[in-house]
Image (cartoon, rainbow, N blue to C red):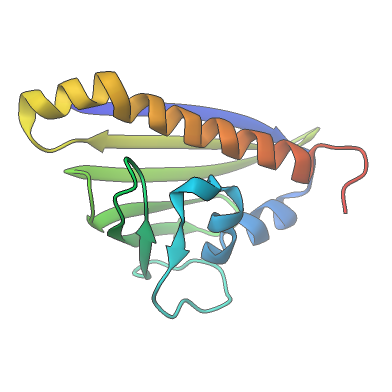
Length: 156
């Protein structure tokens, strides 16, 4: 079964600032919960994501189990959107579409995550009991961190 999680967040910044932050894979660790021990393990240049880019991570998503995860940036529209797709990792399918829409208050950011778990019925149970809640909590954490970074009066 394929699932989706869609989230939006208003950022008090211009599109260039939003794009510079979110299109750098190196910033992903800043918005990922510390207990996930997220680390990029391949040589990723200090430049915005580009179509065809491969990013290798090590992450501890559940129960202290460390795993490798490889994603590929499949589509980029500069200052508008990009998509990453899992090549190898814990999901049967993982596609994360990131969209940035300038507006009067700054930039509305939209995330659309489409995922499927392996193992059929067992995967559906795992999603209901554990996985979906974990993903929602990861995005709640990101929301909180991004609020502090972009939407407080005393931004640094």
